[in-house]
Length: 283
Image (cartoon, rainbow, N blue to C red; front, side, top):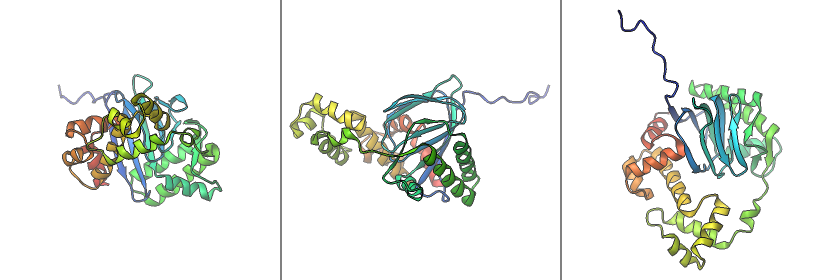
């Protein structure tokens, strides 16, 4: 009996993910993925995160609570907003994600008459028409259609801002934060490779370690050590996108070795650094 008489059935638990950049959508990374067992740790992005769920359910926590988003829904997170991510059903979830820079979203908001840096009234958003247009923009980008992708992406983001956009108010927590928190953040950013211990950092700032950790988390959503790893991953992304080798990048941003970088990279982005780099450099 021929071995190919029975068609192959794709494993419903198979995962895949691809990041890329497309010239038709400047200052924007894109992701198409299906995740089942992948779990994202508490992390942030310097960009907006706007994902159209195509199948399954994504569940995630953020500053305003826990959200479940199913097919046709939008998972939206602002720049710097701490969030997680995992499958909400056994079969996982698939999505198409845009990561537009704040400048891109601000520019579209300005054309709509919005002032300030725009936010969104919800994180899990039900806006079927905007989701349909954004999904079409994503598919057009995947096909290399610069005009369609750029036009549809701007149209979809505009629709989303009109229906669920808001002018972000200044954060009262940041306004009233202890000055030691900002000083601590600067020290961590300047010492990715050789950071002080929490005790050393607190002593340098004249504050107790527990008080510093609590105040830092209140402002940034992460304790100092997790915030440092976020900075390292963000820096690694930039270096990888420029063509640097992953092993060199790991050492330069302060990880012990490439496996250490890979572990944290996957917890933040869902893919290992090598796959991320290959996809970006090939796009």
